[in-house]
Amino acid sequence: MSESRGDALANALPALVEESLVLWGRSGTVHRESTGTIVVRTVEHHVRIDRAEAGVPFRWLVVVDGRRRVAGSVTGLLRALRLGIDADFQPSRVRIAPIDARPS
Picture 1: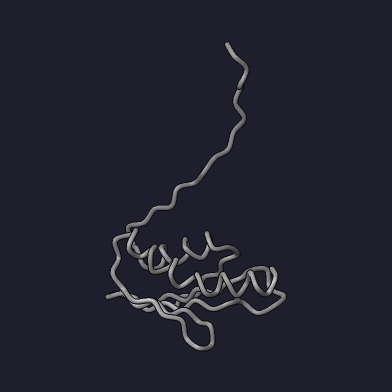
Picture 2: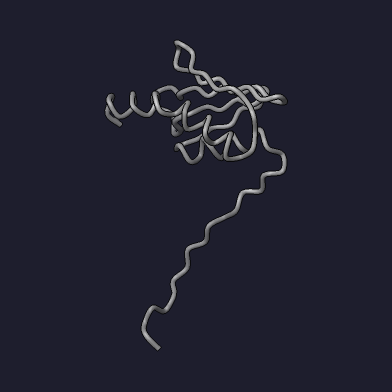
C-alpha cells in the first residue's frame, strides 16, 4: 500500500469505527493516539487497534479487554472488533456457488 493511501486509511479508520459502533447499536468513544493506535471505549470494553509490524501476514492487531485478535483487512478488523464487543453477534458466512444462468 502506498504511503499516501496508508495515511488516508489511518485518518479515516477512527471515523469508520465510530460509525460502525452506531450501526451496531453500541455506544462508546473512539480516538486516535499520537502513536496511531485507535482506542475504543464502550461501557463494557476497552479496545486497542494497532498497525502490525512490517513483515507479518496481517495488518492490524485488535486487543479487546486483553484478548488479542489479528486482522488482515478493514473488513477483518471490523469483524474482530464486533466479535470482541458484541457477545450476541453471530457472523454469517458467504457462500459462492455456480448457478446455471442460461435461459430456460
